[in-house]
Image (cartoon, rainbow, N blue to C red):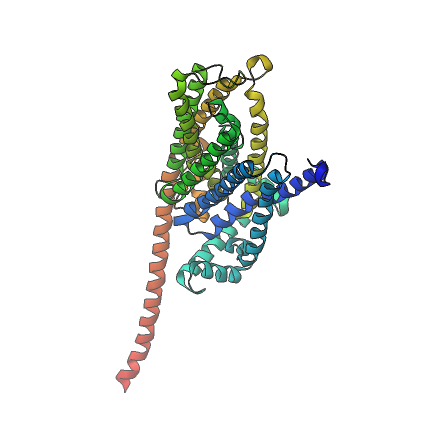
Length: 446
């Protein structure tokens, strides 16, 4: 097929490599930029819309493949050229729209351009650059950066690496970002997205076009769930509860599918094995549960792996730490997707069988839920500059007690700010009173 269009496999590999370099930057730059520009109260909504946009792309890809399968002959090269052309369209849109973007105000402060940062912040917030809100937020960003620079362990890239791994507070955040990527990718939901057509066959979907259609609907379900999480959950009930809710739904679905495959052991193992009539209802339930696993994944791990990573780290190391997390994201995604076909093989062929695969995914998902419960603090509603307060306790207390301790620190900080404001006001009052007292004797003399 490649030779028939005067191409070669090496050129395709080269193109995929170049495309991968661009795609790899997207989950680093996108969530960090959104987190740095959005107000704390809606940061979750804005960042999780990024996840919804990812699923919009997945849905377009699914339906493009489905449409190409129906309307373009299997013998035509256009059956793969047309879906591939979507890359050009989306990359072109990104290229054009980036010229209309403003630089992140936090990045500008980091680059020593506070006045320019204030101008950008004023534009984003629809206020004047000298408004109290813009001045206060710019000052807060600058103060946080100054504290980071005072505690820095060195300059340049090596200094940032030292800060990531030698600072106790930052090391815990690196641990959180690392575990989020490990547990989310090996919970299996990402592999279900990539191998949806094959996995739907395991639970009774037959036919190529039918498989592509239910896969496309699966993409829609996940997109709607991601947008629902963005609009109604992540900034309403918080990151942690949203994550636990999604993991719970994902666990239930994985356990059901694993139980179904255990009760019908030949399904997915013996070629062309049909679901017995007596198990048809259970088969439809398993199909529904795969959809439910997509809902849980979109509400939980997939939304939070971008959001938590983008908002956890201090400004000086945020880009580097997010790059670390997304490197782990793609490495574990690659490992899991390469492992899945081998995992699905019968035990005699070196795999763990379909039922073993889903039992494995169920176990990892449950372990992930317990880890979130005891290790992850709530970051909702907190400014990026105040995240440090969540990590002042010993590591084993942060997940359960970090928020309470941070709230106590918030109260103390607010009291100090209020006292300073009142003292400043009293100073101005005394100064004015002094001016009036100096003028008063002149009036009496007259």
